[in-house]
Image 1 (cartoon, rainbow, N blue to C red):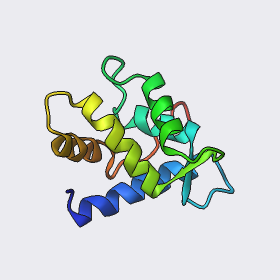
Image 2 (cartoon, rainbow, N blue to C red):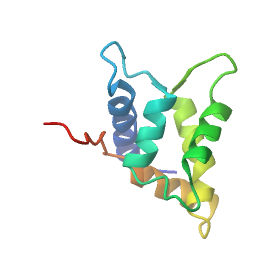
Image 3 (tube, helix red, strand yellow):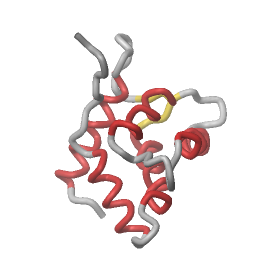
Length: 114
């Protein structure tokens, strides 16, 4: 599994995206919009093997039935779900490592902010 330093920066990325665009957010939970943004900004979606639809489906799958947000544990599960799709030629563990590296240490990209 990924090293603890990598996990720490993965959690940091989760928090940065979780509070993006929401002044009331605590960074503990992420909504679907921010999850989609994370996937786009971190190049998890590539338009071929992983599309925006896949991202939405995985989000719905990992969150609770009535929930509108995911926590960090569910976020890791969601990445695990997307990993084999994004890295078809790798084993499940290697794919998860690779997808974590895509996300770890990243923050939201502000487009067109002056």
